[in-house]
Amino acid sequence: MKSVLIIGLGRFGRHMAKKFIEEGNSVLAVDISEVRADNAVNIINNIEIGDSTSEDFIKSLGVNSFDICVVAIGGNFQAALETTVLLKDLGAPFIIARACRTVHKKLLLRNGADYVVYAEKETAERLAVKYGAKNIFDYIELTDDVAIYEIAVPNHWIGKTIIQLDIRKKHNVSILATKQDGVIFPMPSPEHFFEKDETLIVLAENKSIRAITK
Image 1 (cartoon, helix red, strand yellow):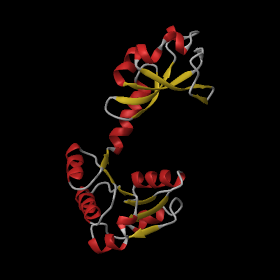
Image 2 (spheres, rainbow, N blue to C red):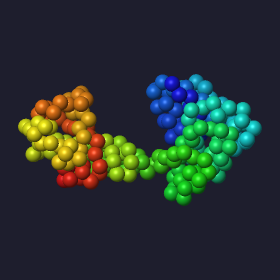
Image 3 (cartoon, rainbow, N blue to C red):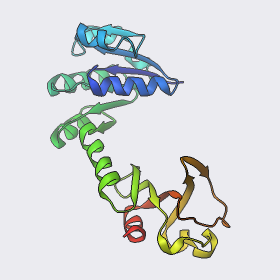
Image 4 (tube, one colour):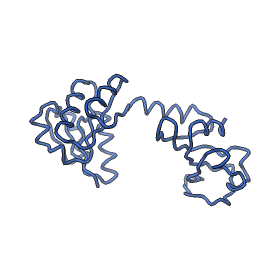
């Protein structure tokens, strides 16, 4: 279990808090607005109201004792930047910050953030791949070039085995699991025969996926 501090209880902050809690982590949430705090009490048990740009307030939280600090402030970049700087100065070990613009991302990274998330951009990119790419149903980006994809079985693979097709060597694609009727079967054997009504969960470079799903 990790300890997580989330600053900002707009939609993004609440979603982050909910997910961290679902994964079994301990969460303290902070917001300057009593209204936003009240809106989150059904999700988060531990909430404090205060100004995250106040050094005294941030000190009172003991930010150096949290494994992860999330700056989820939206709509006020100055406050997000000041909060990030204070967290870093007071010893926060790992800071995730939210940005809406490229220039904001650069400034946050230069001033203490360890990782910056484009909440809207990443969601849009995922939906674009999920609904706009041929034979790709979902994906999780790992780096700019590599991702985990859920794809349809290519027609010329149906009825053949993994070892027959020599997929990893020929296509640079690793099959992590197969999925059929909503059930995931991890690590299929080399003798697995591909069927028309299953999908594949694979790890691959973007260019490799484009080649086999075109």
